[in-house]
Structures are given as structure tokens and as C-alpha cells.
Length: 125
Image (tube, rainbow, N blue to C red):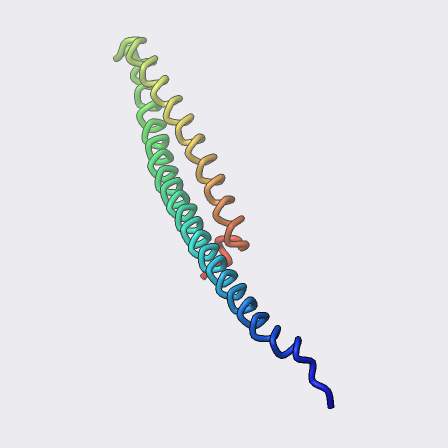
């Protein structure tokens, strides 16, 4: 039986190198995991903000539609001036535009969150 002395002396250094590589890889994975957790949280918070903003903007838009129908009826009965009617109409249009923009932002936030978690939100429990 022959023993290669070079193998005996090189094994400890290979083991040390492998252990060092393992420690580095583990640290990199831990850093990646921490970064991923922070990114998921950030996207989730953006999703929550967009959802709540959409709720508020949609409610405001609905309220303006009710107000607008009342103002229109008063204008047609000549109970209010045209400038009041125009201001109300402009406010209702702006509320609709803000609701639409909020819906777009909500959908974008939802898509970004779903992209990072790899699932549809309705599938997450």
C-alpha cells in the first residue's frame, strides 16, 4: 500500500478552503434572504397603501356622483347658478380621474407583489 504524502498535506488546506467558501456562501444567502424579506415587505406596504387609496378615491367618486345628480337637478330648476354647476361637475370629473389613477396604482402594486412572491394574492393564505 502506498500513501501519497502530497494528498495528506493538501487535504487540510482543501477542507479549510471549502469551509471558508461555505461560510461566504452562507453569508451571501443570508444577505439575499434579508434583502428579499425587505423587498416583499416594501411591496406589501405599497399594496396596502394603494388598496386603501383606491377605497378612499372610489368612495369620494361615488359621493360626487350623488352630489352631482342633486346639483344637476337644482341647476335644471334654476335654483343654482351655472358657475356652481360647473364647479361641481369639474370636482366630480376630478374625483373620477383620481379614482381611476388609484385603481391603476393598486393594480400595479398588486402585480409587483405577486411577481415577487410568485403567487396570486388570492392563493396566499
